Image (cartoon, rainbow, N blue to C red; front, side, top):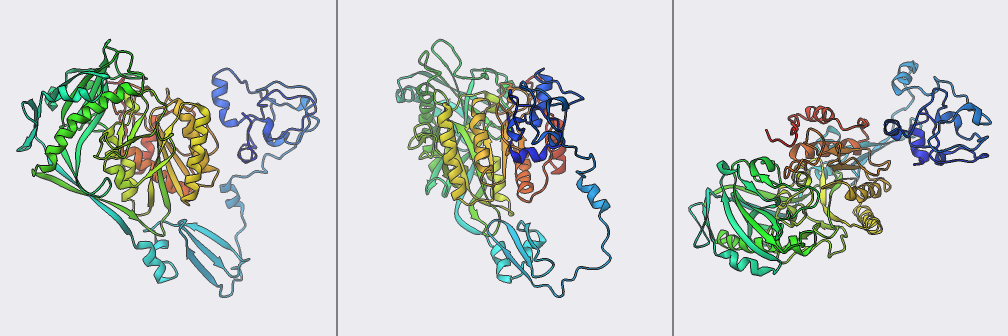
Length: 599
């Protein structure tokens, strides 16, 4: 893969290797040279053998090739008409230049300089000094730093500190202490009872759903076999307002879990499945999963044979489960039980702070890769639209809409990297960016990942236009899963990068999910993996965005927007790098699962 002139400047001291076959008479330029960042992998794969006689990039630029040369061949003196003789000491390290810089014996003549400052919406302080060679500086600033707290004009200081609350959402968490399958559907004294006969009506919601079974699993009963985990869904309902505002009740201490097979016993899954003993197949406590002390209401469905790898099959299972959940929601609306806590969520704008967005790439490849956006009820089905049917185009939501259950996950990808419905209602990056007083979170963009490359490029270009029109100062882009969707994931990063927008990528890569493509803008990446071997380990909700992942991503974005150097990661995934960054941020170490075994 040839390199750009920008990349070339970063690798002048690296070996010069032809990227493709080149003919006699060629004048060598950046377009003829292989990217040095790929050399280690190529050497390991046996595709490249470096030579001690090989020249450096700076020595061959502009030289003429005297004979035909094959791809991935080191360039040596005898094949060129000339060699650029560059002294080894010419390019000094910044530290060396600083040491050798002579000390000034007199202060520069600035004679009462005129200094003007300004704070723009791009999060920079603009300083102009009238003399001293008309020096102009743009200095990064975040609210809360000394520079932000003491701008030149008092009214500017007020502008930076002031926050604007656009709307509020109150989530009332209601304590649930027990659940059972009985002869009526009700909530009394903290106990949910579901009429067992409801399954007969639920399966009528879709003819592809052939049968359904409800089971209550208490925390001490988790060593029980279960079919593959398709989803974990909270019980939440609107009692005032629409999604993203008003009041929502959330049942604390209980979740629904959807599992399923088809009539032939084939697990409803795609890349890996999580059937097995429940206590070994879910990462309890992670955002998309049940918590340690949660009661689980398992909804096990059987769908029509051979429908598991189609869009209608898995959707039928979700739709029929939602019929049951809605019956419980209706009881929760009128239940006045103990409120464990009231969670105040605000859509806040912070004028003067860096404008940022969170971009979440979600599955949109058809078959079992889909999601429901903006249903009527939190985390529901009815009233929502599927991102595949919307053409996978980017759709922007407010942080409160996301935190109020505007996404219902239908995806049946690898369990460890799947962000289930519960993940979105408490997405750590949404929570972290919303709470960060140094950021102005503009919104959360959901963009689908189509199957066909042409569609991927088209959708990614639409995202780029949206990012540009929002006039943002930085963004974080995440994706669940790995492989096919990494193609558009990297395209999204490129769309931001080529517009000069600092961007941080978040994904599972590790060993199994290494990026299949890349670009020069993918230089700030955050790893989600929590498996010892770096694989999809079939433990539901294991390798997804966690609080620690979110903290690293947010800090990395701040660093990149401020121009702080981000050091290149090792060529191979190494969890020590993650833990070193965790330590810098005061976070606990990431403890990996050994062969998928929960500790």
